[in-house]
Image 1 (cartoon, one colour):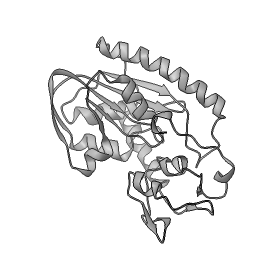
Image 2 (cartoon, rainbow, N blue to C red):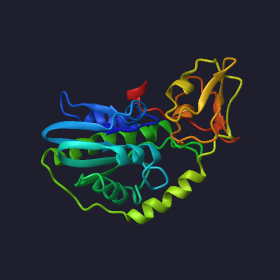
Image 3 (cartoon, rainbow, N blue to C red):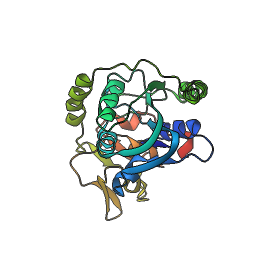
Length: 246
């Protein structure tokens, strides 16, 4: 069983590459919304967590699930964390939180993928992102082989630092800078995919009705006409969506 959280598709892509035939892949957002927190696995079945790193730590939806999760019969427990360069303290923080639920995290892998955090900085060229995704696909094959063999590794990252990094993450959750420009066609996709439920369609246009969001960048990257902006700089920046969501 694999739990995943994704904004632009990288983690879903990774989860699908890591899954065995017939293995359940569960959206963390769906689990939270349906309050599905108890799971019974087949004896020795692997348990995976795949989610992007935000601010070098574990994001709120992942933490919420983990802190409520009960899993019976879990075998090898692992995490694959997509990132732009580094996962910081996310691995050690996740290990600490899972231990509180009686689950021993045995392996963590950082997976460098195309970075779609364009609300903070310009993203790479399409050519470079394609190269990054090709490299990530090869790395996933190697990671899966290690997981299938039950190979643990040294999990880095201070739980205290991971917890402290949440403050920086929470400080950047404001939705104030989001808006839809004149290209908006009123399709409502942004509202339907927002994991925080922060967007509503009002008079045919998106409105950020909650003061905070998860900063997953799903809405701004996945808008079919690139109409969503964040402040004054994103109009000239590229967009990224993993092919698994196209």
